[in-house]
Length: 597
Image (cartoon, rainbow, N blue to C red):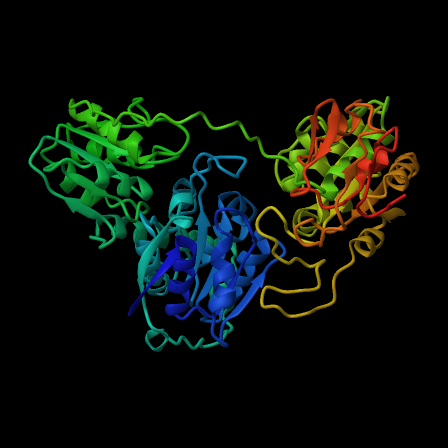
């Protein structure tokens, strides 16, 4: 054993490698992404790693590996579990042979997600066991135990770190490479009575699932913890909230930790509740433990009063914090906490997220906006950096639901409003992940809308992971890139044009021409992410020519542009020379950068 200073996600990855993982796959999504990246970086030669096209495909890959007796890891964020839910729900019923761990990182806040979905509730819904680590060290240890547990009970299991566990850093005790387990898969053994999910088999396996989970709920799990105390009040917690509780815990306060919240450890919970008058449940997202403890009280005839989110003692939404938990415990115990006086510091400036300076998405949105000026339109957005196209002054995202949804929304609005021009924006990674069925649906059902593919040659928002259009795999292999234009034409889209959005005049003309065509049509705006591309010089303002009209600032919203002493100004530290501002300046006061005229 040795110590390494690791991010929680890195610790999880090293735990999987130490457990003998044979296959790891997933789809990038904050806060889960670094797990697969670390497996790819630190793996041995016997570990296969891939960024799958989406979470459903990744889950099916992992299922196939587990059917063959391999140890498989599949990674995603909580929204990705929705995409993977079809195979996952069936896997819970049909079971596995090799260990299968589904890493689902939840995002309380939410910090970078559409929802605050709680995967503990999904575990109960799918009847799959879930491990809930409270810190990076426990996450490292838990994933190894999860593989053993999965093989022992022949079931997929969830490992559910939240953002502060996934992205927190700590000094972790990890195994040396010579201590790693070497797992050799048996291989797939044909048995249709086991692997083919007919209704009769599902019924029989459902009975087995319920029996197994009932037995597990009465067993003593080492991941659940009972800390005895002397008072009549206690605290129950899970995940990172348990860490906050332990930091705020006064001496003698009884504490129960549900490290494996489903199947819920009712026997251990009943033991904890016995002799207590009140229990405060400290957890994030759903009142999962709170509801389970209320149920245990009813089943065992206990009079303990259960408090938490449902009673307003813990916030119903958002992240917990160390200070917030300390305040809640103090109020619960009737010992108001004296918080330290805040340091006298100036307030931080408000810094809303914006598209980077020189981002090609800004140019794409602006081109469409100019092309459609004066027309009745709707602009349906998607999940990615380009969601920021909703901000002023672009104001080009009217809807945003989930990955790939903009295509269906645009089609439906057009079917209902024949006089409206409908656009759907989607990124290149999202195109492969979830947009292709929407295009097929549009062609088949004779829809009328314009698809805008924002191709910046990467999966930018989650850290620049490769995808099928980049010509590179997670393991660094060079492969043939899949052409988005060819895919669209193969589906049946007749009008497909590719253009550089930073060539503003040509981009506007292309959108006008293509959007006026009947049926389904597409414009691919192709220009690399500014993080990947080298700067093409810097733009500069000629103060003699600038008339202070602010058009560049008012219409683009580029963070490199500002206004000083009655003239436009450019921050050379941010400017990458995209030249978009130069192209729209009405008096040609801006020059420099790469010419696109």
